[in-house]
Amino acid sequence: MTKKTAIYPGTFDPVTNGHLDIIKRASLLFDEVVVAVAQNDGKVPVFDVDTRVRLFEENVRDMDNVRVCSFNVLTVDLAREFGAVAIIRGLRAVSDFEFEFQMAQMNRFLDCGIETIFLMPSHKYFYTSSTIIKQVCAYEPERIKDFVPGNVLRLLIERSKS
Image 1 (cartoon, helix red, strand yellow):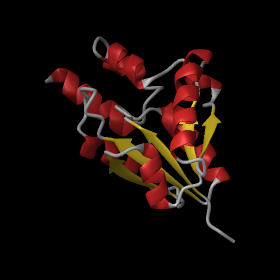
Image 2 (image 1 turned 120 degrees about the vertical axis):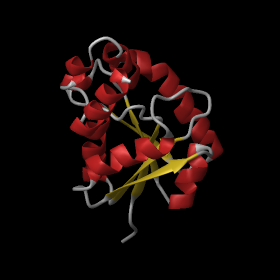
Image 3 (image 1 turned 180 degrees about the horizontal axis):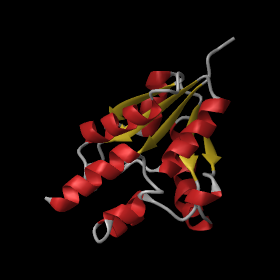
């Protein structure tokens, strides 16, 4: 039986409980899930890529079939490198769908052998995003405690004080 691998790409700046929820769901569907943290030179991240990878690793260490890496290539090329059969994308609301649909179609054009699988996070995280987390954190970091893992919260609070 062939091992089924999926890639879950994103900037993850910072990782949220919604991201972790998607990973838990994906880890039940695939033999291996590779969380791929994007370098993403088009954005100015709060955390550098190595920190984002470390924060993710600390939060998935109890998931035996999940590993984390960074990347700076097209997602389909990374998926091909890992022998992945799918790219996991999270959908929170209808507003996410148009962008994600276009991206899925482009990825299908680039490699028709790699499917895009859309997963929805728990209802508790439908309205959160890394961007919103950073906006709230800029004013009151403690108020995001229900939406990010403890290691992320500690680092965001530490950064807000400096």
